[in-house]
Amino acid sequence: MADEFFDVVNARDEPVGRARRSEVHARGLWHRAVHILVFNRAGQVFLQLRSMRKDVAPGKWDSSCSGHLDAGEDYDRAAVRELGEELGLDHDPRPERWLRVNACAETGWEFCWIYRLSHEGPFVLHPEEIERGEWYGPAEVTRLISIRPDDFSPAFRHIWSQLALA
Image (cartoon, rainbow, N blue to C red; front, side, top):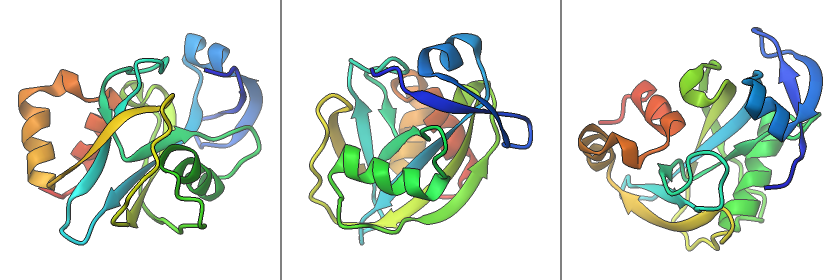
């Protein structure tokens, strides 16, 4: 993973400095991320299996698309950028803000905006980011998390628990 720069934020999610990705993660500094959940017309959510190359939660199921905000970037721009980078959706999709999650241990000290997008695919998955992806009904996601929680990233488990889907 590239050692890019992130904004370090305070308890009110206000930038107070900048640091390299490696330092932010090593020191548990508060920073920012987005998660996008993509739903099809049947109401299924597309989940990604994170690449084994990822530095956090490799080989775990996660949101359809997720990523950190670059230093100076806002949440909405980061959501659109991540959709392009991870799922190949470069035609300026407009995901809607859905839920804000405060920084905590489960999110890796990330303040997160969760977005929702309707899309049928197909997707062009970034091989360094995503091993593969699959569509699941919300009730099936909830069931799988309950019986195999370690198959899912901690951040995704936390975010999913905040949603009233199934």
